[in-house]
Amino acid sequence: MSDPLSNLAFASVDEELHEEPIDDGPHEESAADKELRQQYLGYGAGHDSEHLDTRTDTVASYGQLLAPPSYADSVLFDRGEIQPEGLDVPESSSAPKSARALQITVTDPVKKVESSIIPGVTGGYFTYRVATKTTLPHFGRKELAVRRRFRDFVALADLLKITHRGYFIPPRPEKSAIDNQRATPDFIEIRRAALEHYLEQLAAHPVISTSQELRVFLEEDGALSGSQQWAALQPMHGSFLEGVARLPKQLFGQDRAIPAPFEAAQSTKNTSDLLRRFKEMGQSYRNEYKEPPALPDDEVNLRNERLVIDEFAEKVAIASRKAEKVVSKFEDVGNVLGDLGLSLIKIAKFEEEEGTKCGQYTESAAHSKTISADAKRFGMASVRLSRLSRTATAQTTVALSPLHDHLALTPAVLKALKEREAALVTAQAIAEDLEKKRKSVGALEEQGDKRFGGDKNATRKVANLQNDVAALEAALQAAQAEYDRVKTRNNEELERWTRDRASDFAAMLEGFARVEGAFQDRSLDIWRGVAEEFGASQQPGSGKAPARE
Image (cartoon, rainbow, N blue to C red):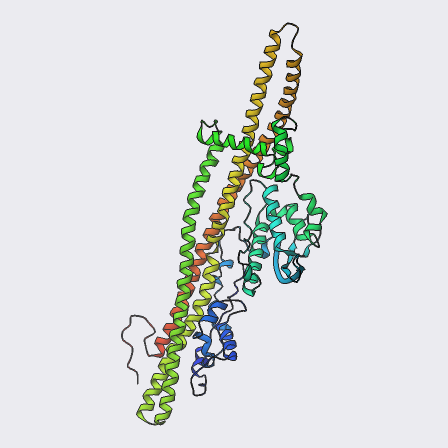
């Protein structure tokens, strides 16, 4: 992942110390000054806009006093070892884009205006250009570009939850609840970046990256709602109202109460069968509060794993908050250093002006000149450290991002494990119905055997019950197969997630250490240079600095 602030740079000392002073008079920031403020800070459009608007007394608000930054003095110049994405670490799930078979970018948000049902009121939404480069064989072209709106991303996420039951599906960005901020440039940029990150996570998944759902989403031109390929991928299920209308008929035997095999292989939430929902709720209650059925060892291990993941989520949530605090404190240090540097530069300018007023060859002018040079030298060093701190802050944020990514994934992990438990409940509920039907068949057959000549009514009931038994056996077979499939997916995903966590956390810790080490090295270089200019010895601890003339 490329760091948007990696090109921040600093002015060289020679340029800074020989910068001509500005005209006399108090400084008031004009529109041109604000533009210079953003330029000298090295910010791109959209970065720290709130900070720039609220903190006018910043490093670059006095850009006339400072030379433009030089790339050669950047914190990252000739220091590639501190780039988190370039670390020599074990392969992880967050591999560089160029190394992936599916590379996706989201760019170019465009607002579309649509008519409203209210006269005189128009609505609107944003579409995003989704560009794809791939070497996967099931794509029709190597380079693709479509436009998608946020609703399409929601539809993709909902479809993947149904068709990829048991997989750890990365969470999609949440919809904003603050409608009046949805059209602001900052909100659009944040959403664009979040949607791109979401698609990158899907592309990094070994199964979802090759799915037909993602292929159609990335490849199908035009609106998804009008695509036949997209419609063919949608599961068949009725609405909730259909289930309400069907329930009385099921209770009175006028409608089928046994799920078909394809229905038994689906989650109860994706069907309109309310009777089945009630039965499975009862089965869950009995499993929870009465004597639960015996579970196989692999099921017990998976349920214990869910408890471990709950504990992991608590630990990583704490670590994520601490990481945010580290980044915030690091940013505060950079701001304070910038403020200190600017204050010293103001003192330098004041002393220089006062010395000029006292006369060029007077003793007061000489003292003022010395104070001005010293204050400016120290102030410029603080300014450079402030800019250095901003770059290091951005790199620290990138290095620690796996904490937030894995924290965001844990709800999806727990949900996938619960899907397996729900599939088991479906199989248990059908098995219980099957056992009841078989007992009823046995009782009726025994009753018919006791009556001479048989009982035609009992024989007819037995035939109906045997049909139900056959249907339940088919449904149970489908439900058991679905449970086994989801359980296999859970086991495979847990193994993959464990490997990814190990590699991602190793890369995170090494990246954080390298960023911190490089920052401290560059800070030492800057302060050592200032100390040498003041006459200090180059070797630390070698004694006092010689007296200054």
